[in-house]
Length: 303
Image (cartoon, rainbow, N blue to C red):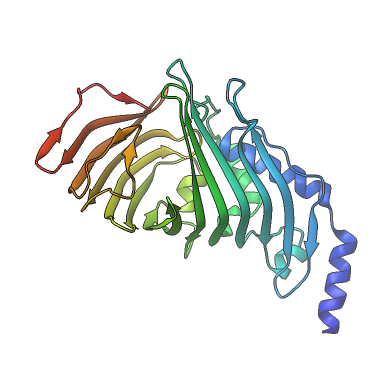
């Protein structure tokens, strides 16, 4: 008890909130290629594991978007360990994020707000990220996440609430194990599977995606799968993902983009999601409703 009090007192005396803000923003910019802002107050919480608390993280949206921020986070907790903190080279062991909101939009001119060109991650700024201890990260937890999608082209807007997202890894070169719990129309949706390693993501390399999901509604049950790869986390470049959905019906969904779906009818969807300079495209899209097969033209479908 006495040791903990002494160590905590030393850390509070040496605590450099402004330096942590600068290092955090520099690391985020190196990984994402975007500008970020962070609330002024950075708090230090002593305990069995020391925790830094940051608030009001934001990255701005494009000028034509209807929301000011592309992404915002209300609260971030960064868990470290005492030895690395005392050496002033804190390792980031775990991240906990509360109140993340992601606003995705497509415009009227075949453009989007998430595909803004970003600089390629270089060995120099990749080293900066590693110096912040991101390579030691083994778990990320997100609570109360909201993903909002607005199609300016289709004049449609929808917000999806995600109860929890958990990412865990046994090492920097090991795949991230993913667990997601969300809701669609107040009914549960869950996803689980693996993503590429933190080393590949932080280093700007290609990483794999292998996720399976399930939706359980009042009248409908569905199984989903998303498999493929992403060329780079920064800017979400060179995406090639195969998506499939099979459902005994989509009664609980009711309609897709204003198109009313038939009731009590099996439905399946397959598609390939790719990326280009103007955003995400759907290719090889096939919709089966009962015995009917709908296969749009081979040209990529704008979303």
